[in-house]
Amino acid sequence: MSDLLQQRQHDIAEEFEFFEDWMERYEHIIELGKELDPIADRNKLDEHLIRGCQSRVWLLATKDGDGNVQFRADSDAIITKGLAALMVRVMNGLPPAAIAQADLWFIEKIGLDAHLSPTRANGLRSMVQQMKHYGIAFQAQE
Image (cartoon, rainbow, N blue to C red; front, side):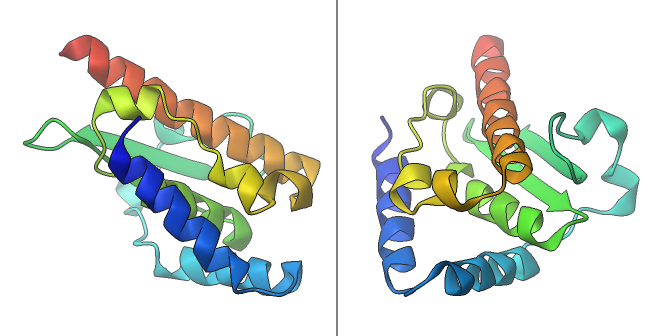
């Protein structure tokens, strides 16, 4: 697995250890969402929507000149936008193979799997799945 992917997950796990309770962690996730560059309305197309999310989440992926995947995401729900920002932070700029095979252990480590509502947890799984699908698709093009 990619060293960069491991380091990013480690950094996020350490970052979330500073918060004493889940209200603080949710506030941090919301702040991450506020820092995420929005996607232009012209790119908020149905083909970019992630299926399985209760709120609307758009995910765009392109390959850069080095062959790495660049993700952009946006959502109409503030916590979901924060989750999207977290996922972009972890997966952005990685090679397609690293994305396709990513073991995202940080989700369990920071407790997201246990503290999200069932609908948000399902949306997060759908987001991860879509990112991995992009990795597989870009890998197949190589």
